[in-house]
Length: 367
Image (cartoon, rainbow, N blue to C red; front, side, top):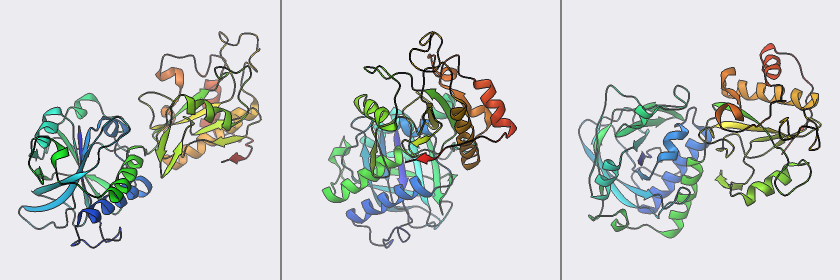
């Protein structure tokens, strides 16, 4: 699957639109990724981003009628977390809806990927299909993901479906993206760093409640975020987001006394529930499974009142901030084959408190 992004807000990113040298293109693209990660009022669904195999980014600096040619760059994944050094491409097309906007085209099929590698990728408009966005379609279905392409425009920190059409070509013909015109190492690294953060950024669409249980190799429950962070580091849960590396898979940890400790930032993809990593992960310290902790030898068999109060307060804040509906607040066991957060976790009572607006006592949040 390919992602094609045209970054045209060059002036806002500190570049003149007419100055389209390779290094300038890469810096403008990096700036666009950063703006999308940090400021966009809507985002591209996590399922679309995670399926991407390649990306092409092309400055589109005009909306005049007819077809025109602009230059851009392309990059493909080497692994799920690593991208190849970008090379130069060109885009010829029309029907750009918003002057100065950023055009994003996600190519979903192997046939389209082959076309780009062969030197010519055709982008066609589809009036009967619109590109999904998180606020309306947080989890696209297989029919939507089976489209040849999904096209967006990014204007003034907002994303819209687009009907652009055109063709993408390598600047130098050849059977591989590696045969395209190369760009400089320094600007490539900036581009790749911002690209990685962009693909690791989410707009939270729900909340998954976990318990920590006793970490493997330990004899007692974790007492702090640092212990969980170190264990998750050894598990390879690392993510690079907003220029930093994070290990803890959860977004928040709630200690036994109700203290809330922050993990990775809310806008960074979690690593706590397969296919639901655009959901915020909140883990309550404890083992609340009667099967795994029948006599309380691994700690209390139920969360403390302080933990539940803190969880209610935290979830309310997340609901208000991201407009998360109650039905998108789930247990890990609701979406995966696991006992987490345990059958002794009072989930029904917790949801009732959350829905009723009952006040709770919350201890400080630490970062």
